[in-house]
Amino acid sequence: MSSLAEKKYKVQILSRTEVVVYPKLNQPKPLVLVTYYYPPLPPATIQIPKEKYNKDLERKMIREDIEKRLKGVAEEVEV
Image (cartoon, rainbow, N blue to C red; front, top):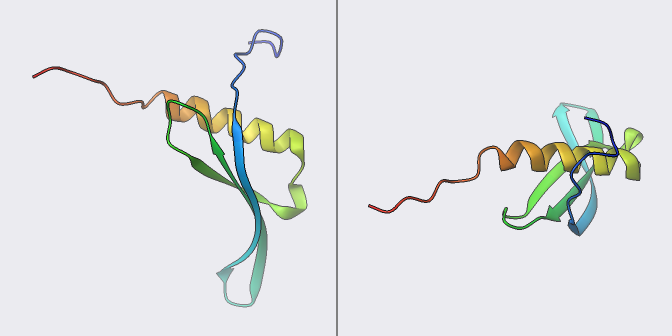
């Protein structure tokens, strides 16, 4: 699918937070946590390595996360 034909998602960025995690002792890994909201999904947070962070990557990762999560939207049934 070309970028011109991609579906657009109107997303509200709730926060961008810089944190440092330690996946291994004495090995800090700075991250940017981006929390966003896209109805009908609940808010979600993506993690981006700080050294790779930029707005284009943020948008790309949010889009991928939304598309992955939309595939698993709950089904409503009447019983």
